[in-house]
Image (tube, rainbow over all chains, first blue to last red; front, side, top):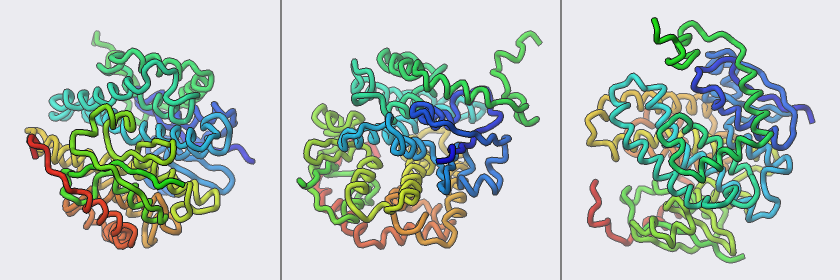
Length: 233
Length: 221
């Protein structure tokens, strides 16, 4: 089989580094020890027709291997998990439960967390964002309480580390720097266990090493966190 | 094989529109011709420990079959589609692409539509909602425009009807009577094709027949 090719960005705003969704795919590929190539996209080209042929919503990542082209990081992670050992149990029922956690990460836990990212990063200048924060944080907290109770003292969500843990940890990592980063001790340890995996470390390093381009001029102000831009001036 | 047991509500805030997520699972079961039983919960019981043992997030549906207990409607639909023919292509690449559309429905299209529902219903009385709606609607239109462009003149998203179409049609139905879907005639026709399937009609009738309960006394809307 030829090596798969994924797409990723050559530059993103400071707050997205280490979070862009190709990380999920890189992590899965590293877990199953599958080498891959990366095609880097300059910002903006993801919305142009050539990339939209691969990804109708103009996002990264995509995944190409042989004649197959896929988008949606969750679907790509599942495809990798099905094609290689190591991310899904072989027993039928346990396999379904691991996939259940993949969907839970993306459809139950991630939406309120994305809402927080929109309010604090993309719409932080809008007048509605600050008054909405308490209700957004309350919705995330409810999910974290529930997840924390279910995880309890376990190492992973259901038996061995799986594609479900991979996506759940990738989703929870988005809370870093938020007021909810360390409200649930067992979830904090869970994320730390995921991040300590050598495959995660390799994936993160590879994503970070790929940000080699200068920002487009109109986004230059997003190249660094505001506190780094010199409060002395 | 034992009949699967689905957990659903006996009352729902959508007044039987079939937007509660057990609809997806009912529809999938009808498509593959799998009979099932339903356990109905009173509104509120989904947050009780008994149901949380089935679904830690206190939601419906849950799905039980033999010793297997599953939650997350997308995962349940995939489980049904993997065990029985009719909802996923047999060739590997076609199967992967159908699953890709399942994830696109629930992780790319649904969040922006759901954001709109939260704004209109749960935050409908908040002073900022009116100013915020145009930004939400812009995101909704961006996604729908992209989906419409990809669907083009095709009947379904990738070849024959699949579990990806099932979830996408159900997600688009979230738009309800907002009038937004009508700006995209091919998407409106796509949803209508889904709703015209006999399995969809059977699923919706069964869902409605189960709505025999009363709203909670303190229901605010």
